[in-house]
Length: 73
Image 1 (cartoon, rainbow, N blue to C red):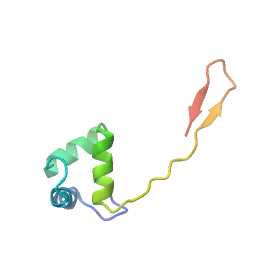
Image 2 (cartoon, rainbow, N blue to C red):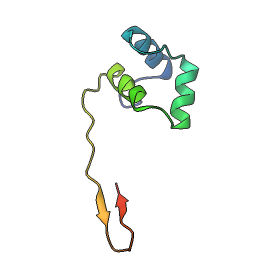
Image 3 (cartoon, rainbow, N blue to C red):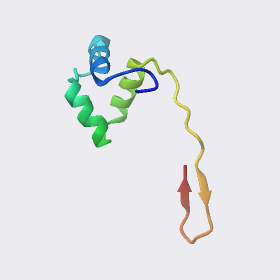
Image 4 (cartoon, rainbow, N blue to C red):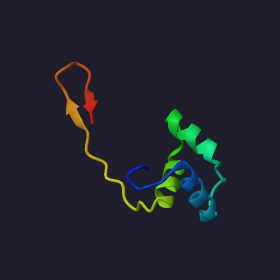
């Protein structure tokens, strides 16, 4: 959000203008983001509101040095 110049208040305003999905208050957005638990649908709505059209996801590296595989970002 910071990199895109969005405050929680601005994000709430833009989300309300999208007319898709529920209206989120500024405080609701603050709570969701700070809690770090929200749906993927919410994530997509926020990306669209901020003008993000693609998200790059790097491949996971598998560390097979132990008996159970471990994944590293």
